[in-house]
Image (cartoon, rainbow, N blue to C red):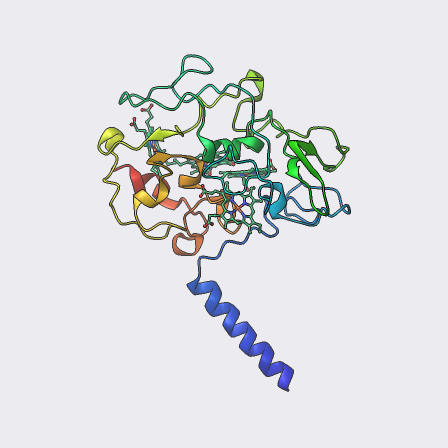
Length: 255
Ligand code: HEC
Ligand code: HEC
Ligand code: HEC
Ligand code: HEC
């Protein structure tokens, strides 16, 4: 009887929390790369590989090249990227409005690309779980059928954002521009002070930007496993598809 009551209170609390909070649930998502993670790409069981955050963050000895991707636990990608609107790898790209991208992705996008570029090892981490285990340039831990010491890169397909056929220079020319300054009015962009609702982690467009620029993290929150394709849109407020009615796009572009 008493247990039943506690269970009911707990269930009610859970329900309330679930409805009122935009809490990110990375556990069990495709970004949970622990042995019990939600996708097919993940660590082997054992060897302390039951951690989740460690494939991206470490509490100590992080790679400080990634300002904007906090406590980053991966080595810096070495490839030269071909940016959106660029004529070659290693030069700035340009949009129709004439705004130029950075020559290389800035740190917040480079962090995503340190797994999604198709070149960098997904299973490479600087500070491995447990006592010791620090290797400055990163070390490859065992992932699925891939043995420790061997790189496991993003397989060909839609999640390989840097096109595999163009290696070693990942190609971003067929992706929405990133590492690009948000210029109000260009491409019908709304003022950065515009209030926005239903977004995780931001209440204005300015809150979506990183150093005034659009980066991967503007549209995505890598921890938001309950959202379709990790989009920052709160699924609960827009139905099954967090980009229903192209709300992600219409947030910035007045079209
Ligand atoms: C797949 C990679 C990845 C994993 C796994 C991951 N994170 Fe992150 N995390 C990021 C990135 C990228 C950012 C920067 C996001 C941005 O630009 O907004 C970040 C930012 C953060 C921040 C600061 C921004 C904020 O939310 O206020 C915290 C705190 C954080 N992560 C905690 C965690 C914890 C705790 C875990 C494990 C449960 C975890 N992360 C797992 C990629 C990851
Ligand atoms: C530690 C490696 C790692 C990092 C860092 C990382 N991802 Fe991923 N991501 C993955 C893996 C692995 C998958 C699953 C790919 C697959 O199954 O094809 C994935 C899948 C995704 C998906 C597809 C989800 C789906 O259900 O289709 C999106 C979107 C995504 N990542 C965005 C991001 C963004 C944005 C960042 C940076 C903020 C990021 N990722 C950083 C490893 C990573
Ligand atoms: C302007 C917004 C925006 C930016 C910036 C952005 N994305 Fe996305 N991304 C989306 C949307 C919207 C989807 C869902 C597309 C769909 O449903 O097919 C998506 C889907 C994805 C997917 C899953 C592919 C699929 O179609 O299943 C991956 C992986 C991904 N993004 C990674 C990234 C990475 C890495 C970056 C930075 C280099 C990035 N995104 C930047 C909006 C964005
Ligand atoms: C966080 C704000 C933001 C969001 C969300 C966003 N965009 Fe953009 N978009 C930009 C910026 C900044 C540019 C660069 C504009 C310029 O030329 O200065 C841009 C440029 C573009 C361009 C023009 C590229 C060119 O070559 O001129 C298109 C097309 C576009 N976005 C489509 C989309 C679509 C489709 C979505 C939804 C999936 C989307 N955008 C979501 C900010 C955003």
